[in-house]
Length: 250
Ligand code: UDP
Image 1 (tube, rainbow, N blue to C red):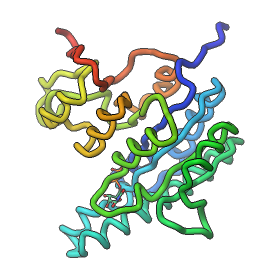
Image 2: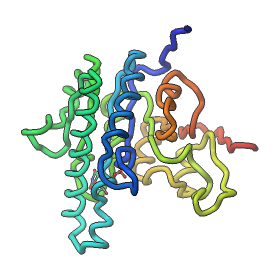
Image 3: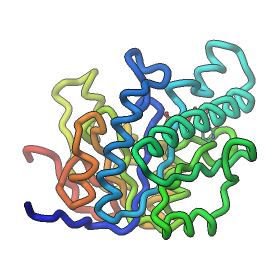
Image 4: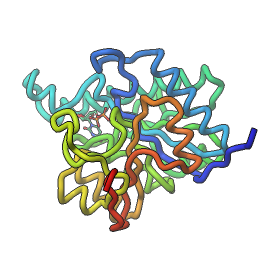
């Protein structure tokens, strides 16, 4: 068998809360979490240093709590950040059961359960081949974990963000609402912001654009995608500063 080699030295995987969720997009499904950990292990076995930012939408989304529960936005957002810490702990547990060394670093100080975020320490963990799971978003309300992913990827020197989603890339329009919508295989940050493509919020995209941090949006529910991406296979949609925009079938 030919030994596969990784194209990247250090990557950041953005896992939305729904990647850990069971049926109905809610809660933490242990089978899914363990299968994710297995995939992370496969990538690590190629020698890639892995940082992960985990979302919290499977437990709490601040904006929803405001609408449904009438809770103040900032409080609701802090509750959302706490949800990301719960997900990070579940993922850490699953990774450790697969024999991976991990550290959770939280942007919100919660000493009894996780390290606080310290950039230089996070980099050291990565150099020592520990999986670093960043929790608590950026630690401020009114932001998202996508912005946290962009920020941390830039801060700790990742080459790429792998944004794990339920869909296989970025489409011109929501493919659930418009089945004729075409998928981009490559698109620029500028085009994504201008056309308000459903990728990441504009804060996250701007940060990546300014710091030349490419993103690949891909389907995490297809087993093997993560490893295939890391060895350089063209999967999903690549978002970068290149103006070489490509749409499937055109
Ligand atoms: N959140 C926040 N600041 C951050 C990151 C997250 O206030 O820096 C809150 C916000 O309420 C958000 C929730 O945490 O709705 C969960 O994060 P997110 O929606 O990004 O999770 P995902 O969609 O990735 O599951």
